[in-house]
Length: 434
Image (cartoon, rainbow, N blue to C red; front, top):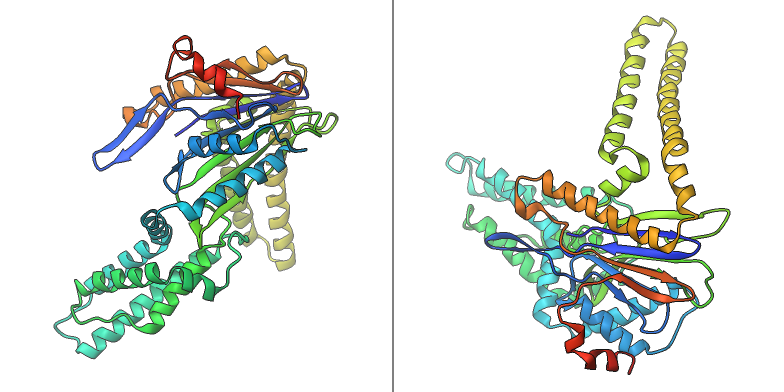
């Protein structure tokens, strides 16, 4: 896991990241504290990139992809950070066709497994409860078919609850043609698993079609539920006087096209947004500093207030004879609860968040760097002393800190190296040789 914090005002963008990386294997989890997460995206222009969550995309180390992109970019520049983001994502997509078929296959299985594994578990649980001794074979077969159909419908209903997007512009026929081999093997796996409890079962064509439709339905769900890589782009485009930052989540590749979710861009616009603090990963500690209250406490408080006022409204209702009056009282009591939440939020911003952002708007580069580093360190301390399992200490190691300004470009304040610079003079000499 990762803690990355961005601090920005009209002068600069400052970013800090820890060095912890969690590796999960058959023997559990292991945390290493030497990972690099902040990189220059251009060797000569004031723009950088940070990564979190998975450090690989389809087996391609993102660090390698970033450095290959820098070599391709050379001294070319773009007008905005968003344009840098789009160009890098185009480059990343161009690497997908070169990924091995085995990696793509496993990636697709993992993606579909988010629904077919729960589906299989549900079907097996229901079949296990059947009385095979007293039921006729035809009845058992029909029951198993219905269990599969019902479980597919349940998963499709779950997927329907999520907001839709347009990640993969492919028709159902194109999807089926591209992934026919993997889809067939998934259906075979489901049938083979059911056969362990019902040896003569054959998965029907209608169920297979339902499964394929379920998987196609998943590809344009906005939520990136699979293993993902977070990418943070930051700095100044050629046409930007003030810093900006863009964030994307990159998930699985379907039909050789990555599922990419574009998060909200943040730009400094004096008079509208003078400063900001952005926690990109493991945000709870940074949000606590920014708001003065733990985000889980805020969420619980709001839910509790809404629930309590709703209970009050329900308790008063039976005491009222007039139905119209009853609805008015319910609405009034619930509105009071919402007003209370809003007043608490207004106080929190005016007394805590607002003053902090006001000071930040005038803060110098050195203090911004110190603030970003401190927020990462505090997150590390919290993880260390609130978990009894050392493998859960997912933030730690040296903190890298960088400041990007329009005039000076990308400047490292703190940076770890896996080699000694004085023993590798050739590295510095060739760095700017594209």
